Length: 93
Image (tube, rainbow, N blue to C red):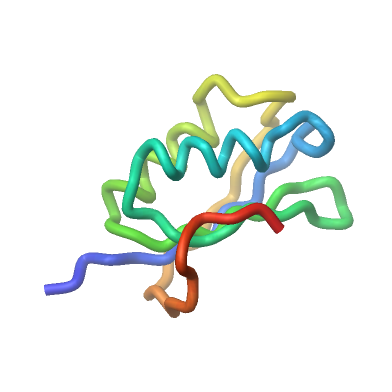
């Protein structure tokens, strides 16, 4: 049974130019087993796509919402989906 999921999260707040993507990648690597990316969007949000087990992705989402993140997170919107693959690791885009 494959319990892997795809989490796509959009993080609002002061999250660009503060190292947010770097810290997101560091946390994904710390949790382990997560592949995907974090990228800045033109509207000031950061988009995070993570594929891995549900528990690992939920841990990353919890960190995005309430962890010791750089900058300031005003809110996180997420959707859950089936993984599409194609990621070797977690990268910054």
